[in-house]
Amino acid sequence: SGFFTVNKECGSNLFFWFFPAQKENWGDAPLILWLQGGPGATSMYGLFEEIGPFSSYAEGLMKRNSSWNIDNNLLIIDQPVGVGYSFTEKDCYAQNETDVGEDLYKAVVQFHELFPNFQKNKFFISGESYAGHYIPALGHTIHKYNPSASVKINLAAMAIGNGYSDATTQSDYGNYLYYLGLIDDAGKKEYMQIYNDFMVAVEDKNWEKAYVLKSKFIGSLYYKYISHAVSPYKYLPGEPEEPQNWIQFLNSNETLKALHIGNLSFQSGFKAYNALLYDIVQSVKPWVEELLEVYPIVFYNGQLDIICGYPMMIKFLRSLNWSGQSQYLNATRTKWCVGEELAGYYKGVHNLYDVLVRDAGHMVPADQPLWAYTLVNSITSGSADNPLHALTPCE
Image (cartoon, rainbow, N blue to C red):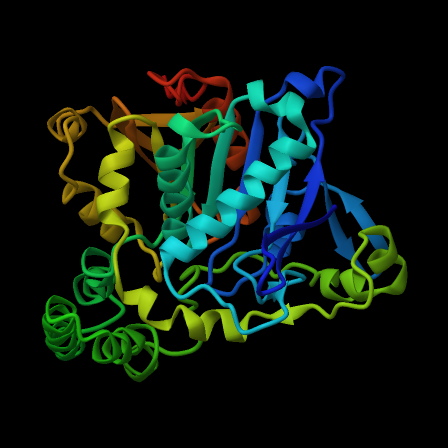
């Protein structure tokens, strides 16, 4: 663990935590980068709550049986600067996805310089939620620089969980909530009116107005018609779980010393969020379309998510303009089982794949750890032609 300096002039540094694969030949295992969303959310959430080798409770650390680093090397980075332990000495916060991509690229290059043996390993970018912006930003930056770079990144594929990539196609909450039965005709009418106004604001590049309108969908409108009792992250909650105490763990003197953090404080991400405020209503769709010509991208979604709901993700994927689009649209959807259980459904061909994970919300690996583990291992062990090769079709 430590820091990668991404802007010397600003004193900007990204915190990383690396976990080798839990097997003898870990040096040959694929390398997964995990990015949390937000904007402004710490990747420590994913580490402790979802995919890392351990969880943190009051009684101590507990090993996770479905950690993504059982078979893969796992790199966790807090970003952009101003999130978690990542910091900037001046107010040099990322203003857009170009800034995000450049800083992340510098960090990934430095990792490969620090561990040169990994330059031969397949590299996968993964994450969830607003990482639907971050992952294409980093992927596009790697794609741009790789041909002439002295340190080449062996980018193999990307996995975007409950991703948010395109504000216009992924903000049609009126139809989604109506067909879930959570709003009536009056609610749908008001949602659609604000959605139409939002679309006009985006078309006019009036980002401030677009942001204000966008914030109503899961803000004032949501609580007017639905209620705080229905979580927009998982509309059918399961059994309550024991809360973790990983923030306390991270802030303990023993942990700070072990992670080479010094006297830095853990940041909320508020400043990073504010700097990316208008980025929220802009799209990375052109980068996704460009990347699909070269790299596989798997979009997976929990069935019970509202804020980045599956139907709106499908609307985004159906709107893409790239050479394999007709093949994707005509692909057959397949039922996917893990053991005797129906885990979900998948569809795709030639670089574009979508996966629905049953009985999961916004954080798929937290809700269905075994199924998420099975999915990511399929991606990292698969070929460019078939990243979902290890998913078992139901009989």
